[in-house]
Image 1 (cartoon, rainbow over the protein chains, first blue to last red):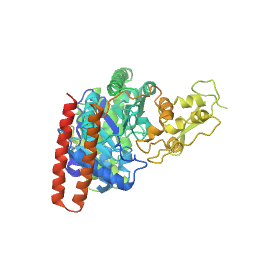
Image 2: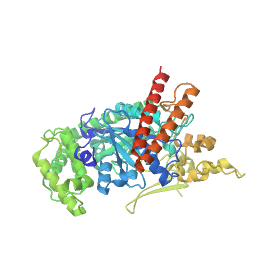
Image 3: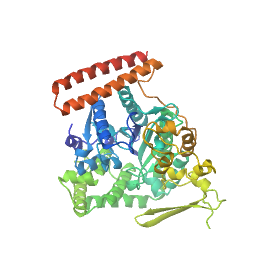
Image 4: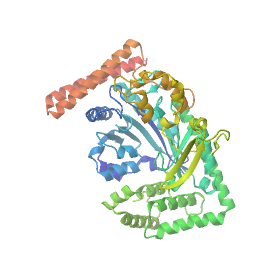
Length: 357
Length: 180
């Protein structure tokens, strides 16, 4: 699989067919691991990093998997290709922007990605659509076991899996869910929800992880505790909390329509109108409007649209995807034009073909 | 003079300002105790090193303690505290006791790992050693394979690849036995 093959076929996690896919966009489980004989990221030399990347890419290549993983050397990619991987949540911002020998192994469905030489030597990730936390964890864990049989992980009886940052030590497990919460935002209950998350020792972030804003009313909720609890408990605790938030959001949506139908319908139809007709569209605004459309579809205000199509739109309007689709780099103003054109065409065509192309 | 926003009792000595796009978005004022306990809203993401600051000084007491340093990677306790990153797998061994306190603070509860252990480490001590040895050999072979490929010594590379396959099978066989 080449990088172009990957780009042409957006990942499984956008399919929009998992549990609760109308509120939960995707679920993710990530395991952080280091190899015992090599220094960690802050102390490893460039040469050792290359040696380790080579070693790990060999091991990963040999892993028995239903869908084999292809290793991509991040240093050999164009900036645009790295950004595309970032927009698909296959690499982190640090990894895309990093230096030295590093890479990522990805399977053809994009449900598995393994970052090599990021903050830790290995970051195994399973990514799925909707609420599928348990499945994500089990898949990542299986992959972890395969690699553990061939490599010596840095591990301590008391502190568990050793990670570069103490916030990951122990299980090295970060499970997270991306949610669309427009009603909680509109009814101003979002702060309450976020405080509840904080009380449960869960972190809440915007679309692209640490320190980002909640564009498009999309929130990522993840565990913060990684030690002193076993993996199954961490997953179950997050699952339980997310189910509560989903319930909270659904109730808020109902109330919203009952309390302020005129306002909601106007907001939804305006969004639809602008997306269908604008000649310039910045990505922030596009996210905001698509969020309203998504809500409108759920509430039955807009005609039925495929959630997969909506998910695809929201990926393809991201800067790197847009430029790749267009066939080259674009200056910001050009991007806004191309984005607007893409959206107009998509809305004119409707969600019929379901694949956002 | 500010009073701590969290406990509303003690004077605030920790003042946090969230700045976005050159605009001051929010200010929070906390006393030291509440700041350490992490009583901040979700919008603040403090580096963990800052979170634990202050407690270390009070622990150290009047006498200067000998500087703890990892003999493998050279990271000192101070370095670790200021950048919040371990340098290698040996750090936890060297910093063990101080870490127990610190992790308790960061993750705010029981620190001991009770989750899974690395696969392939089950079985008796002797078995574990042998698996470890196999893995070490595998690593060495892979290193040689890389060299052979770089030097375009294709026959040698093919031989090494065969040895790797054999070793992987032996390791898999061992693991199957361990699980029975």
